[in-house]
Image (cartoon, rainbow, N blue to C red):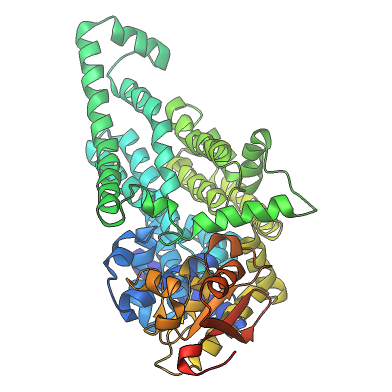
Length: 525
């Protein structure tokens, strides 16, 4: 019996799921974790196992779609983000491969795609790291896919689907909200092209439209309608979410600016502090070279642009992400461009090739060119990951190639193991703005008092009455300046409360666990 296209796609997708799970679980057992996955694990533990008011954690943890994507896999505990990213990346393959078969009906393009998904270091990083990159790539692909469908069919249904995809993309990574800025002029270009005019050049089309009252009215109405369809839903969704933040956190931008709501606020600051304090300081990517780096990372983009050479507005659509990352480089000049912003070009390039491959006359030579390009992309993908200025990305490359695990995760596990050995009625004070990595490995978080609980401030001001142990960031801990629970806090309590003292019971390079000693209980320091 012959296997049909959809059936063999399901088979390939299942094989990829197994492959990614093996990679992810293997790296997990070696001890590889990252800040994003640990943050989601910790917040999920609060939602399902915590005590007190958890509604704020449930509704305002950001990015919210990746956070909810891990909920299904919560029974797998620390493997939950890995399970989500492995299955999600395989779903991304299925979405792209099914698009290839619908448009080209040529399985050889699917095999080229499979090579990328099996061997590209960036895709392996997406699938095995537990990060939410897979969701960004899925919705980014769907957004541009529906835009290109609209260009071909001129049906506003595709614009509506693109708008929904853009909303999901923004709630996977809020920085993609800036992508809307660069589509504002593109909408006018798209509208001009959709007018039934004999003139082909956009500038002459615009001239003819403005000199004809009926065409001018039609141009204005259609442009306004496209603006409403494409951008009203993302803007409304963001405003509603900001109002939700204002209601429950008294801050419109709580989801994007608080270290209790999102993992990357503190990590971005920490990354910049490390770079500026490092003797081997790296100059951030310059704007002139950033786009060139992207072309080296995904040279298939050049092929896609060549195929679209007769459609100016479609080439401009391919160029919009370049302007987007240049903008991110200027706005967020204190951090390096993360790996996922390179990966979107890998997906966009393949989408462009798929849309125009049917116009190629010599398919055999074209496929050979694509194969050579894919092999080159495998090489540059590894070089970019291994030589990244971002510590988390280098850490993944080191674990993948050298089995070297960060000491920070060993410390988190060590502190968590000690907390797990304490009596079940021993209350522990910890600030999860910086200590979420410890909480993620803690078995029972009910005795752990964190900021989401109403008695956190009381325990902070009167530790002798509320807690038995406290986890403090040492002076050499890079995040010690971002929490109240540090050595300065201990000195302040000792100075102001003569009946309270602290005894060191467990210590690592970055963390110390103290037992709270009170003279009222008869204990001595």
